[in-house]
Image (cartoon, rainbow, N blue to C red):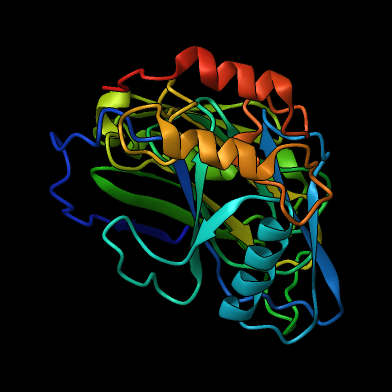
Length: 304
């Protein structure tokens, strides 16, 4: 059996049974670890549906801290019209390496690809996670930037807590192709996840993760990463928010303030500074008559 380093962080969050607002729109929290890239590289954010952009690239210089990387990603998302904050639901400042993207559509898939940044662990944590996956595609350099055996990470997060496993290239006999990495991580992770309300399936160079909604009332998602400087690691999660998309300010009713958001952004596209992603209700990349008509049709609706 592989002598895998295993860590189970049982947070005792006490969150089971606590319901979120019935009309809360979907948000996602992203947690970043320190990049170890020795040359400039690029990470990618992807939101589906709701974007005409194939991916949002963010350039990461060498010797960047986790907080600096967080800020670069935050600024890139804001430039594309996304609502981004570094505060939690209660208005408290998140730790320096975290941010939240707000007002995402019900069923939005959020993917993060850390590229060749050599990060030990990143998290994608949407509201009410439904399904996710962790991928290691291709072959990976078995050594990190410091010449040590590279480490590969996979894990899940639910209201119960966090569960993550790590395995080094040395434990893999330096066989660091994607399917071998995923097989080893699967053997360690899958037997541990049932108490967290999760199923994990092996799919070649990918781990598919399925969440029981009763265990992701407050949060759910995946953890992933590698200290190898090879690209190919990524993680993605589909979350479930409110189907009342027209409640743009999340106050529980489609009203005048929501109409004001649409009108302020009317005619803008994703390339315009005034574009507001949540006002683009059909996700076609422009705030137009169709979005205004959708909101007017729902005007007065209580999103309870």
